Length: 246
Image 1 (tube, one colour):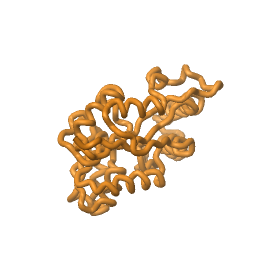
Image 2 (cartoon, one colour; image 1 turned 120 degrees about the vertical axis):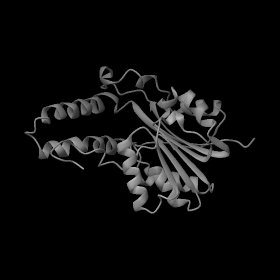
Image 3 (tube, one colour; image 1 turned 90 degrees about the horizontal axis):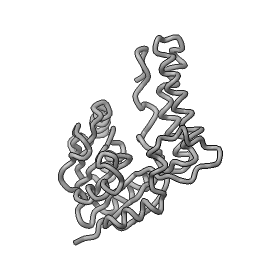
Image 4 (tube, helix red, strand yellow; image 1 turned 60 degrees about the vertical axis):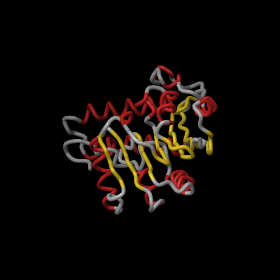
């Protein structure tokens, strides 16, 4: 919650990714059709996608792993409010330290915990049971528009694979691509606006606060990088991958 002391913390986002409720619902429905008994979310944040999968799969249990204690507090509160706290374990640990195997593994925007994308696909393969599913949410890089200022783009973003290259990495790691989809411009704009909304709402209410200039500069810098830099080049793919039975 936003206070006089500072902005809120991801209060305006349902997911910490460019993911709409509609797309999340389709992903959850596909996963539920495979009737998982165990779901693992690697880098779960506040665990919204994990909790939605568990709601759709009443016989399943879940484990979420993240380093962000504040996000995990939100996850635990939401799990309790929705009557899921007896079916989910939420652990504060490095994503790469997640142990065990699951019928469904979620890794949305957390592949960096394993190194690069190829390393993540390899490591996550050890956590997906044969016949199971991995949902990988991963950034991609598209050819930017002529007016994009690449000086505003972090150096690692243009090195991301494009969508075809990402799918090829998954196939090369032994998965089969069951469904390939990408975030829309609307999803991206909603995500970026929601990310900035904590700061902007606070600045509207506290323009003379001692920290206002610092937070205003931070918000303005981020918005410039988004709108002038990576908005036309950065994509985000959601791959639902199947691991063949052995």
